[in-house]
Length: 235
Image 1: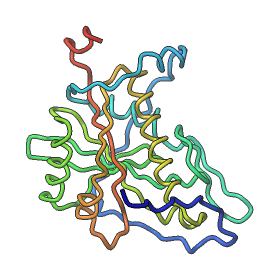
Image 2: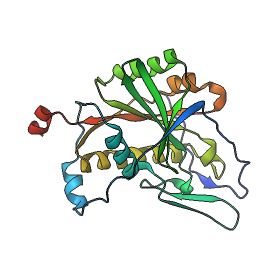
Image 3: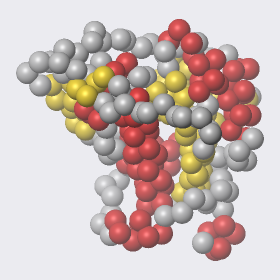
Image 4: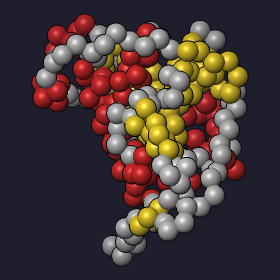
């Protein structure tokens, strides 16, 4: 076995790099309703019950809204003296950079739909993307796990958000992705939803979907859906 290249430890930059803006090909926008306040319960009970569930029923917009609200929304933000924006979300992120955007893919009567989640306004925006490239991503995931009537949620990484403040930031991007996926799994369990993480990165498919020049990368994702009754009884 050949020697593997060591993963360098990230170090904060003395001077941040220039900000790199990213514009997705969006059009229509849908505001999502804020869910009712969470009922009191033990987080330890949720952790004890959490498991990967691989059967997925269709997800309503209200259920999707509730899931995104508790797992990925921006709760509040602030700027430091240098003008740097810090966002607080349910998942921790190195330097509060939050480099991963959420791509939401659902099967509709007329084919696959692609939307982008805006965590600051808790809204979904339709994306104008190539239908063949979107179908390619969907089929790629299907090779690992049947999506069925579930919703595909994929992490679209924007490395410059973290690289702007850290040198050798690669490991931070992957740790952020893992933290976000874990929070999603906990939120799904608490909301009585089925969720299973997918092992593949989907990097080639994401770059094809948005264009390699945009600099986005695929960091994996999850399939989410309602629980089927027979599966719930087994659980």
